[in-house]
Image 1 (cartoon, rainbow, N blue to C red):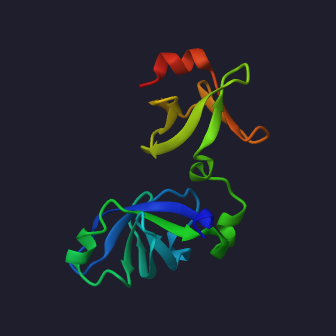
Image 2: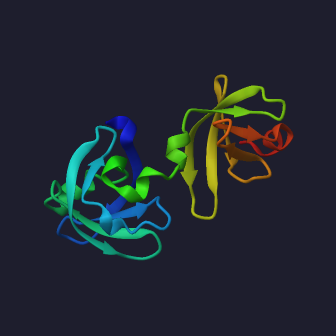
Length: 167
């Protein structure tokens, strides 16, 4: 089942005093209120959303059956939220960055220089983490530097620009 799980957001804080949590959605164009069954954290704790209220931007206030009060809600701060993609037709055919973790990164000559191991979405930009041997580098996900090629099932990188901007 883990292969079918899609990370859809992150619990960022409590919301109110009754145990609701604020979640930031990672999905563009998908209304969070469609989700009922979720999994929380690295242990994929199953839960059901009993109430969902949009806040602003990509934020939602949700009430979850396994979080009865604000004290319990505190324990779930900074935990990722997942859904089983098979449960939602809206998610079945789309490709998300989380699907591309562990994909190879190739330079202009087609030589593998690393692997995309993680990403962070800061709203204004997405930062990819590329592992090259024993060293991890971060690079902005912009077409001038790196792009995903579905035919090759790999990221293609402009090596010179990568070396100029990597952190």
